[in-house]
Image (cartoon, rainbow, N blue to C red; front, side, top):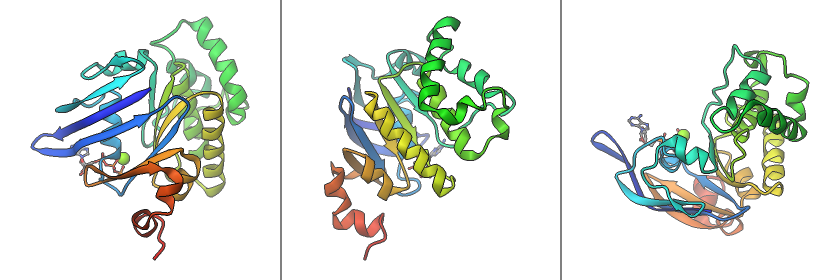
Length: 235
Ligand SMILES: Nc1ncnc2c1ncn2[C@@H]1O[C@H](COP(=O)(O)OP(=O)(O)OP(=O)(O)O)[C@@H](O)[C@H]1O
Ligand SMILES: [Mg+2]
């Protein structure tokens, strides 16, 4: 589904990621974990075409998408839910959703897609006419994910979906990720909640200082000394 090989990104003089390799298979959930500033969001930005790469190759759904603009990558079946949600606070939930698929499909198809999605997002169904800005952080996160799914992606990139949410909402977000996988989606999950991320993921990679320090099956990583000490607080 997705293969990134040796990708590098610089911000001006400074190289933020130094040759990252990452793969996500069909229906797989892959977690990308690492400390603040490790380069997780930069990696997602490079894969989704929002940030230019200075080296490496990105293959997605059978195409070499290296250097493709973000909108073309999005139309080929990839969606990103960025860090910090970013819903349109002044617009209603329904309006936010309809904007989600706007570049991909006409209104009738988007209405259909919205109906399907509301099955997975009961929280949103009751709030369709409410302004997004008046919802809780967790509800806004659900809306941000639902909006990303309006384009019917094959691969979803999720950047820190649980950040700043109440524990109960974190559980709901992770239940949703499980449901999305069941529905056939492939997911690349960036998370600071390492324990939960490794629980739901099939495989995981640890990013440290802009390079992959460790990759493997999520269970293996969860029991590795490096992950236990650095990210799970076990000494
Ligand atoms: N727009 C930018 N301009 C310059 N440097 C940047 C920019 N965005 C990120 N960086 C730097 O690149 C490195 C990687 O940042 P990135 O946001 O990818 O990390 P992250 O792993 O997502 O961190 P966090 O957990 O805080 O979200 C950091 O050193 C950061 O300061
Ligand atoms: Mg980040």
